Image (cartoon, rainbow, N blue to C red; front, top):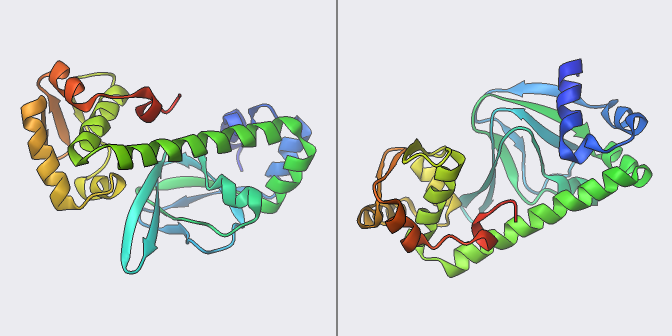
Amino acid sequence: MSDSEFSEVRRLDLFAGMDDAHFRALMRGAYVQSFPPQIELIAEGEHSDFLHVVMAGAVDLFTSWNGRDTSMATVRPISTFILAATVRDAPYLMSARTMEKSRIALIPSADVRAVFDADGNFARAIVAELATCYRSVVKSQKELKLRNSRERVANFLLRQQRRAGGKPVFDMDLEKRRLASVLGMTPENLSRAIKGLRGHGVVVDGTRVTVTDQNAIECFAKPNPLIDDLAT
C-alpha cells in the first residue's frame, strides 16, 4: 500500500482515532487492488476473509434468491463494506460487484478483530459505524413499508437533487433498471411511477431529471428526515 493510499484509509472515520501502532498493525497485511467493472468481489454465504474499503469507483451490494436478485445499496469512496460480517466472523449476507473501474483496499478480517480487542477508539468507531448501518436499514424498511411506488421514486429524486446541490436539472447516478431494484419495484412499475410524477413537478428523460415545480414535488413526496436524511 502506497503512502497516499495509507493516508486515505487513515482519514476514514473508522480508523481516524486509532493509536498509530495499532493502525500500522492493522495495515500490515492489507493491500490495494484495482478491479474492472462487473467483477464479483464477494459472494453471499462466503466466509468474511477481508474488510473491503472502496478507495475509488463504485460497488453494488446485491442479493439473490430463487432465481431473483435485487440491489441493496451502492458503496462509494471512501467507505467500507461489509463490516458486520468481519466483526462477527460470519458469512456475508450480500454479494458485491464493481459497477465501474474500482480501487479496493483489502484488510484481513482476523487483524480487524484482533485490533478491535486492543484499541478502544477503534472499537467505539466500529460500534458507531454499525449503528449507522442499522439505522440505514430501518429507514429503508420504513420507506418500503410506508410509501407507495410513486412516493418512493419522488423521495429518491429529491435525495438525488440534494446531492447535486439543489439544482433543478441534474443526472441520476443509477440507471433505471438498477434504480427499480433498489426501490423494490419492477422496471415496468418504475416507468409508470416516473410518468405519474409529471403532474407533480418532475420530468425524467433517461437519467436526466428536471424539476419543473419544486413546491409541487415536495408537497407530494413529503420528505421526512427520519427516513430520508442519512445523517439523522
